[in-house]
Image (cartoon, rainbow over the protein chains, first blue to last red):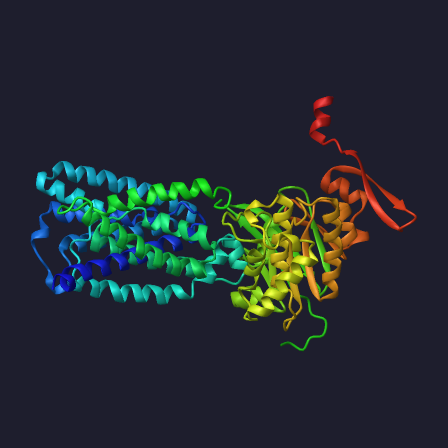
Length: 289
Length: 277
């Protein structure tokens, strides 16, 4: 009973979210031709946390909307906030010449800064209980896992995989540069728009479900690249697998380290992922960049 | 397929290109025939790269038209165009640790020729460019000249196999990092491509290099086509003086029968003269 209703959905949700975050990271790093890109760069995380904070502040979390598949209003707020932020970033960096990824990177940082300020403002307005909820949300946690969330996440992951399948070759060509990709016969602007919307959707849903989980999207593609090279045909699926494993593992630690209390899983991914990442960087220098 | 017998690979008519009111190219008309090598020369900022971008479909011409195999560039599907035309930009930045042969293999993206044929083409082209020994090395660890050879191999592999129409290779300063022996290799390569029915449009700064590999030469000066025709007829001391502001002398090597240029000095501009008096 405990196993089926509490543990299993939680492990499944961790795996699904880890996979989507890691694959989104791999896609964005390819799209931006920058190994330092991660889903937070296009404003998803920042927008989502504003949305979530706003929902908490307005006291909307007491309303439950079970009609929407068990999602709380906070989750919906996060999703809407994240998606709006990406749309804004995308619109601002698209001109008559097409979308400039460099501008998008900068606009992403600007919008994230703005969202940070909005968050600070809201945390001043919030009372103690709200404040605690906001900061817990921002650290990410998986204890709300249930089957209805899996039902949202699973089809999304499958759709994500299906839509990404044909894009690995395009992303490989993108690494050469946009004009080079264009001369290789790729409809650059179409591919770019599709991938940005796809990752925004994926990361948006994940963030809405479990809060902001840092580093998975940044680190996992790197680990995979160090092991098997930058070819997206292996990078994307392998990142998915490794992201799933990392988050399940991190969640396991978050439950047992200070049991019976729980650590937020975002804290674990950072404490677990960063030293390992730095270790790899030190030992494989020259191969990464 | 059109029934015309001698059909240009590329035909540009009255191209004009403006950015924010500044005219970068004005009224340029030129054509490239199958299997022909055309060198594009001109001083810095004369519009060579803008012209290449327009001719390769990366930028739409403000005025005028570009036709590839008698069909407007915009009407070609991107994929089909990429099977017939490959473009080497002046500078490519690749920060991800692909091996050289993986970089070259990316050129096969627009083709559906299958893994085996692709692998064969990649190996062939790398050998052809004296880069076979680089195949398994990481691109990011190569020297500038080696990277340039791998990129050249990449665009070459893109048009290597026979397709329905004659192919076109556009190269923007392919030899800027090459040592002497590889510059010579480029000359031989470009001449050899003509025999494979691949036309080449190449931007070069070295006039002697241009003379040894081009059938025809196009000279750009301040966005205008100052001259376009047979290499011997176009490259004259008068042209070099008026377009490049250099004094030059032709030397003749009786052993090989080659003409080559020796620069003897810069032409003082009227501004400098005014300052002296």
